[in-house]
Each structure stands twice: as C-alpha cells, then as structure tokens.
Length: 121
Image (cartoon, rainbow, N blue to C red):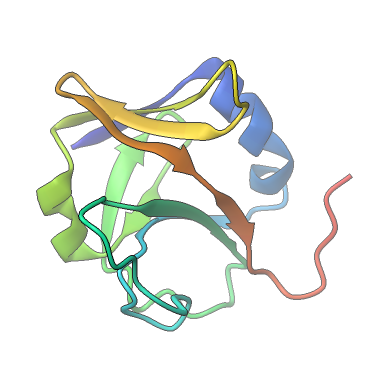
C-alpha cells in the first residue's frame, strides 16, 4: 500500500515534518487513546494526527509508505484503503482530501496537532 502525497499537501505538512513529528492517518472511529468519539454515520472519516516521537503510538500498528516517509494507521483501517491512495489539498476549500482511483474516500481530513507545547511558525 502506498500513500501518494501531493506537492501542495507536502507543503502544508512541511512545518510539522521538519520538527521530526510522527504522522498518523487515523480512522476516526472512537477507538484508541487519541479518539474522543467515533462518527455515527455511514461516512468513513479520517484525521491526520501529528504526534511527538515520545507520545504513545501503540494504537497505530501498521505503516503506509508515502512520499514523505512512514505514515501510521490502525491495522484494521486498511480495509477502507485501496493499494494506491492520494492525499491532496482541495483547491476550493483548502482542506486535505483522501482519495484513490475508485474515488474520494474522505473530502475533509482535518489536521490535528496533539503534541504537547508545540508551536508552528
């Protein structure tokens, strides 16, 4: 499985990645330490989480290869992903969008920085 990250998405993620943060593609299903509640609808909802390297990532036991290195996921969330996924920026709304050759999986993937005491300049 590979996650292609568009140039524009990489640009938006660069301030986080330069600080050696851990990038997680989280299926927001209410499971795990960093999930407050699941989505109670028929939609599949993902979030991009930014964690410090010292924070607990034990809920995310699988990695995807990507253009920017390893992206962690919950192992069971791979059932929603195709072999080739793309993370890009929606030009109109300026939000992250997760898609595959089959179509858009999630048109609004929020970026959530969960690192303690971090500021991005």
